[in-house]
Length: 200
Image (cartoon, rainbow, N blue to C red; front, side, top):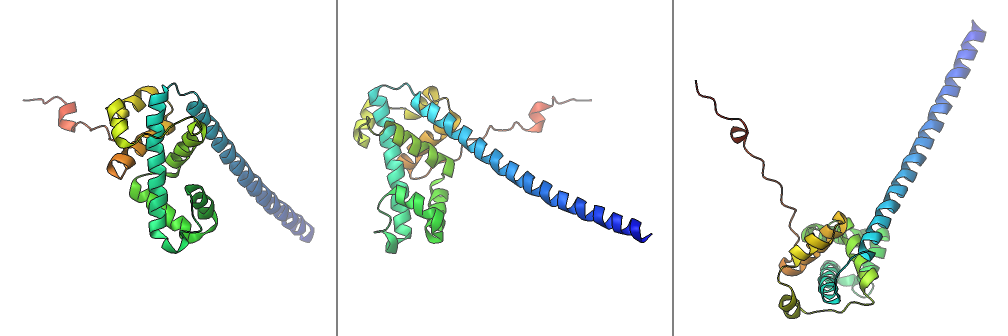
């Protein structure tokens, strides 16, 4: 009986070790899956940004909205952290520091929330800025409105990538209204309208 007990105990220990190994491998696999999904999303975003077919004037208008939205975010972060103004001269410095510095991260997340933006929107705007900043020109608000009246329509018609479209639309809203509005939800028809009324 003792031999059987020892063998059972040894088997139980082996199973426990296998379970631990399985859990570690599962965690590694999940981590790698997330990295691959993130890389695929970034590749798709870059492809969409580089494939945009705008005239130089349209590109300049979009670039101007992107610039103003990014400047707005940076300004709001500095307002929340006046003692760190010298150490955060650009939005890029805010993005770098928010990974390491808890105060900067809290301020950054607060500003995103207040402006109705998410991290993915900022990624889309920064990608657009990097891809087109060297050839685009900044247009002031008066000039922008002279050229195109409905920028929202232009974005929704010409930008097919949903992440990039959302980011550009939110940049437009932040610049024009100070805050991005959540996307409109489809109004649900009341149940009474869906079911025909039956009279006895």
